[in-house]
Image (cartoon, rainbow, N blue to C red):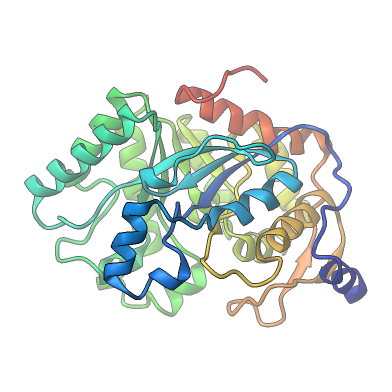
Length: 349
């Protein structure tokens, strides 16, 4: 492994390596913060209210969007509330909001439906066309019974709304295998990984007219044979590549097999990073992650991963060198088609 490549990139602030393709890039999975009160106002409730009333704002999303633009990203799906909405301002990507389902009223089916239908109606009328459904097993630690599942009856009104408005659905359904062996070892509480995927399949079958974007390679990059079957059986399913450490760790284990999978399903996988905006980011936080993705997808380099990975021991960045025609589908053609299905971009290729 050539650590000098990583150190040189770090010293230079992780500038974009030369791209292998010239198409625009769509990042289908980021987390935005929206305007925030200034630092000095955050810990003083009265001053915080004054800052809100006076329109004093900081823009924590700006650094992420600037890094995205430098890496050729021209459209971003940003998960966040309506306050995070923005149009492309000069040298930054166009943001397409994905509004998350609220879990505050879980346990009260009537209240849960009313709260979310109000939220989604407001979002839809503001032009939002993507809904985020976060169903990670650890959600069960935060909610009263019954345990939430993708096919839960309480979610039926949400899916009916999504289908009626012809929206897309971004769903997080599962986490890494090793988490199910450790933090989710209590299967009676958290369910088994296959249980979560079966619930997703039941929902996919019930809503053939809804396009599902399953985050983090469907939550199962460890098992490409399983993803083969999911994609074959459910034509309304698209995967995204969000999750920098997870994707690098699992897909980099066998570059040849991973590359063949992406070639086989090039029109069903879209690029995503899972970048998360933080208020006080460390230097080059966002550029670093885009740099890792470019090296991983576009080269066959084997480097030390310049990110800590508590699930990987000594983390390695092993590129899988996708061919240009697959990169064009990953970065642009598939994401564009997904956004077009929700009325956000023109279709075509």
